[in-house]
Length: 150
Length: 205
Image 1 (cartoon, chains in turn blue, red):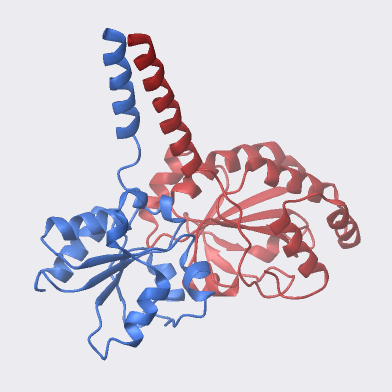
Image 2: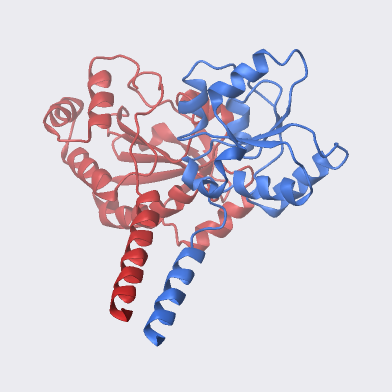
C-alpha cells in the first residue's frame, strides 16, 4: 500500500511540475482559431471585440491584428498589471480576444496568465487566439490583415 | 492485485512523462522571407553600449540568434550556444544574440545568470523587418565568412545541427569553397530548402 501511495505522490508531483503558464492547459472551449476570428471580424458590423496582444512590443511593432492593442507580456507582473488596468472599466461580458504568437503554442508564456487573470476578474466572454507556431506563420503568412507600428 | 495496480500506475507515470517530453520537443520550421543572400547589415548597441556592426565580423562565421528572455525555447538553446562559442571561438565563430525584449534590464540579468559568453545586442522592429519579419522566436541565421546567409532556423533547433553547420563553414576559406561546402552538406530539409534558394539567388524561405 505504501508503494501505491508513493507512486500516486510521484504522479501528482510529476504533473504539478508542468509549467503553470502552458497555453496547452487552456480549455479548447476558450480558444478561437485565426480563420474563425477573421470571419468574425469581417462580419462584426463594427461591433468588434477588444483584442489585446499580450506579447513583445518589438513583435507587435512588426505586425499585429488591426485594431488590437498592445498590453505587454502577460508573463510578467507589469504586463498583467497593464492588462488589469485596461479592462478595469469594462463590463464583465465584454468580448475580449487575447493573443500573443511569440512562440509555439505550448511554449507561450503569456496567454495563459492573461486568460487566468481575466477569468479571475470575472470576465465571461474571453477567447484566446490559438496560434500553433507563431504569429508570422499562422497569421501573416495566411494573408490575414495586419497593421504595423505602435 | 497490488502488483497490478502498481504496474498500472507506473505505466501511467511513464505515459505522462512521454507526454510532457513530447510537448517540449524541438521543431525546426521553414523560415519566413529574408531579403537576399547577403545578411542585412546593422549597427546596434550591446549591453555595455558598445556599437556592434555586423559587417565588421566579415571573415568570421556568425550565428545571429534572435531571442528573448521570456521565450522558453530560446532559454533552452542558450547553454548550447555558450558551449558552441567556447568550442569554436578560436577558430572564428562569433555568436551575436539579438534580444527582442522590450528593455535591456531583464537581458542583463539573464546574461549574468546564464553566463552568456557572446555578444548581445538589443533588437528592434526595424531589424526584424530587415530580416524578413521576426514574428516568432527563436530565429537563428548562420552567416558565412563571406557575409552571406548560409542557413536559417525558426524555432528551437538541436545543437548538433548548428555544430555541423558551423564546423563546415569554419573549414571554408572563401566564397567558392563555401558554395561547394553548401552543396555537399547534409542538412535538415528546411535548411536545405533555404540553402537551395540562397544559391539560386532567390529570396529565402
